[in-house]
Length: 444
Image 1 (cartoon, rainbow, N blue to C red):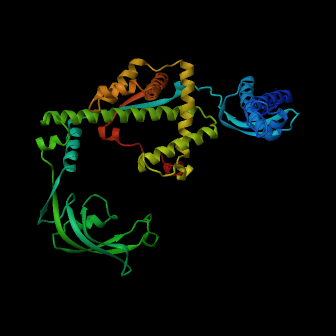
Image 2: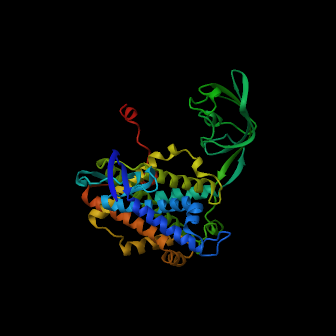
Image 3: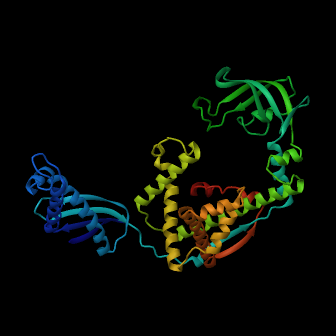
């Protein structure tokens, strides 16, 4: 077997493999003889069919099977010989496929990039931390009470936070427009449900009032014919209702599944959940920052095959998240462009992580695996049942080990970096990170 390899571009390789004709002919002859012993052909006794007849009838198919097997075997032998690791499946083309002549084929594929990690000691990391203070806990409890709140009609002027029931009709240049009319609509002032200025001008209106609102549609409004247009809305206010927060009582605590239905137990449970959410948010932001810096100082080429595979996974996750696990929606209908950047980032992180793990000889710490599993199980009604299920499922347990190993990579990189600790508020800590502004905008 002769092998030659050409670098066509970046990570792409074109490997040419030549296999001696003797090997192909021997394998084909052996397969024809095996077939002759088992095939049934009218006019011949079982096991007595001449190989010439078998070759005439089945020779082409047998040769194709042999070629497929030979290509598979020799391709991986050639990879080992040339010390190449393909990323994704190869594209195979036969350049010579004639009986009695050497078989020659080409295999086009991408290889994994060679990664040499840059020095992480120059990296600046801001490690943010926060605590759940009493004011944060009170605010969260108020939010939970609002979710269970009732509404009571009042005869006073409407204020922010009140709910008004209205009929309305909108006009542009004196003409009513499609979609600008509604009846019996409940609107909470301050919810920003309507276009800017609409809710503000309803503040101060009393039940039974007729109000005219002058507003301007935003330039980015979804309806092309209304973008940037001045409009007049005629509104009839039927009622004004104020929000009455749910009382902190046994009935309220029952809705949260508490065994001990007291305010003290409720506050303790809410705080514990807030702290869990806070720890996860802080950890995720730190990890994102650490990996972003890792990518920044280690620019690498990424195999397109790996990106395509990651895009496929992200598509499936999106369908499951928004359409449900039983959906028959075709995930490939989602545009690749939606997931391109995220997929490329995830592949880069994966490749760089593998190198960090290899260089530092990291393995998933068993104690951390146990503690992570226990922490996850705490959120379920029967934690031990969850733990037992994971421990009995190698694939799921492997995912936990993967998470732990990822955390160990973050810890290792933090050991190398220049880390500054900063304390922030609970609200800022759990707030999702905003995407960075483009360079042209951020410079203004």
